[in-house]
Length: 305
Image (tube, rainbow, N blue to C red; front, side, top):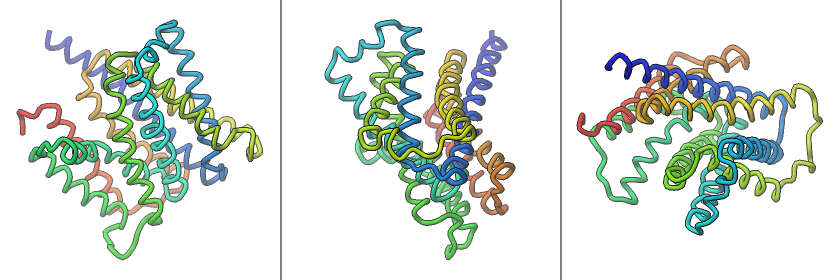
């Protein structure tokens, strides 16, 4: 029985690693689009969210049929969905893209990876729940890691522009909201459907601000392939892989594998985008990964604290 459980967990971990790897690939492609192709954020986000929302809802309709409209029977559910789509999805996609555009995908991914710490801080501020000892350890280690990764160990020098750092931190905050806001409606509906509606709403709102037919860049095979990769690899395939992993392993186990994403982004950025990093930056990034690992492992088993 123990071997069967271990095998299921390993299968779940493998699927979660695939999802995290796909997100890492997507982040690298996003840097290529934002910097090498110089694609404006407003146009890119309008295209990405609208197309991803349509595809996800189509998948949800195949799986659920007309049940995809179930959550609209309650005003409370609609309110939570809109909050998730705007404050969570829209804000996170925008801040993450701008952070990559102004800096690097590797730095933006590390900063967004701090989201579990912001969830803990939010719990402390709004629910008045005291942090665990391991929360404080993880927070201190992550701050040291970010300091090393962003300054290369020199407080007078930033490895990325200040605005990229600010947008990256905001992407971590919005990533925390992205996780927290839909918890109740995800428990009552298919995650694919919730992500589909959230992304579609975000896509419609982005297009109201900047329609995809206005200010469109020159459409080239490279651009189409890049955006297609971000939508399919970074949104559709990655999320479906994560959902599949949860059939074999609990979320506490799966979440620890998130550490694969920044590692993949770092490696791909070095190979394909010519990113030059020092051993201090690598050490700092590893410390952030270790800190979130500590946080997630002990948060899933508070008794071990």
